[in-house]
Image 1 (cartoon, one colour):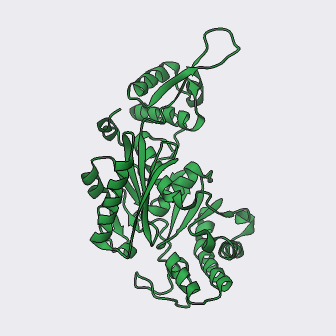
Image 2 (image 1 turned 90 degrees about the vertical axis):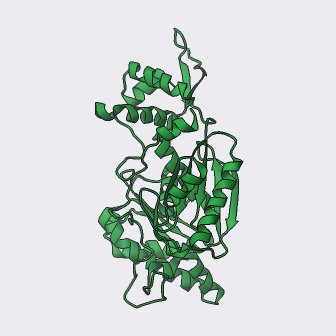
Image 3 (image 1 turned 135 degrees about the horizontal axis):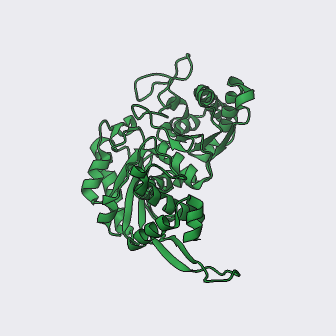
Length: 384
């Protein structure tokens, strides 16, 4: 399948679509859905025969035969040999996703010192890396660095590119326009449009915390009802409800960094208010306090308490099963995480929320880049 074929088949990565299709749909929507269903089965389960796929998906063998033929012609599915089978008769031929057919470029703009990116395979494994120092760049200068990083990474690919995914701080709409990212000086920045025009490949731009939540769901084994807190240049959250990303009516679901926490004032925020969660929790703020001689345990405990105060109403309203923290481990793991869960439990009903878990991500600093890969996989192939 060529790049042009991929672009023609681009799906909209949007609110309201379950990440992992698992059932049949109405005839008018069936073809694209069933393609994704076959690809998702192979992506998550590995090698399967045509009969195996029919049993897993509930589709007829005739439908599976037609879809497999189509997907093989496009180079997305390959035959990998016959199953060793003790049963009489002709052994079944096994199929798998052609995992070397394409590569993905993922970019993370969430950190306050560097923009980083990677070339990934279809399983989310990183093949090569690149980064550019941010050096305080904002506005057009920051955009230029994103474009330069993307061009470098595209030059590192060794297979056709399925797409480019970008996780950006701030409020990002479903067209990939960064509506507001105060820390980068962006307002109405059409990052997706600019990158598409420059590179000529499918591009998806989304909020960095939303991307991180997708990575945790796709590669980190997270629950289908979860919230991921991304701490970096700012503070944001990504939400999955029943396996579906939540964006909100104005694309600002999870924008908790600029929620004022408490009524006791606090430091001035870049947004103009005082006492925003970001002023307590963002990496540059915490590092500056600690470098200035503040007591480490007290500072991190207080930050965790403020995070717990911000999260308690959300946990109470949505009955979440899991909260995942992503960011600098030396800041988040320990007193901060302990204070967060203690505050949450003191402010919610134990009967309904006592089994809530809070943990650090296992995906480390690659989480947003791998989430960007999930966005591309979901948008282009309908799998995650």
